[in-house]
Length: 126
Image 1: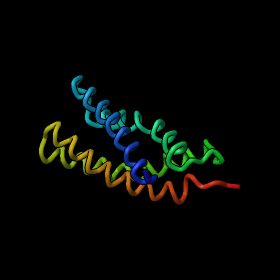
Image 2: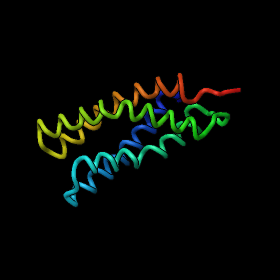
Image 3: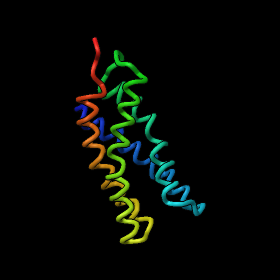
Image 4: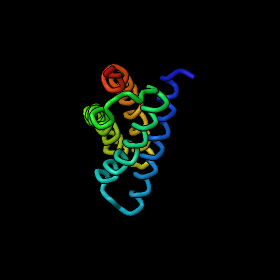
């Protein structure tokens, strides 16, 4: 299986965790912004470790520095994803629309993040 496909498989797992957290919090009438923040946080660390071990197969990187750069690129792309998700929420006003917006936004952002991670994050400093 190619690295890009595996990357998207892990992205799907991280997305499922993200949406599970968001949907769970929505039942407690917690703000959409808090839902998105907690959902985002839930998938970040696990996705980084999976990507490091299985996608980029790189154990010779500075773990802390790479995680910071990985997180930075995620943060850089997050407004695009959140913007798409929130547009669906405000336009359609349903939980289903929120989930569809999240899936579209996350798919776009995960692809862009793969390109950034491949070029800048998981690069050996031998």
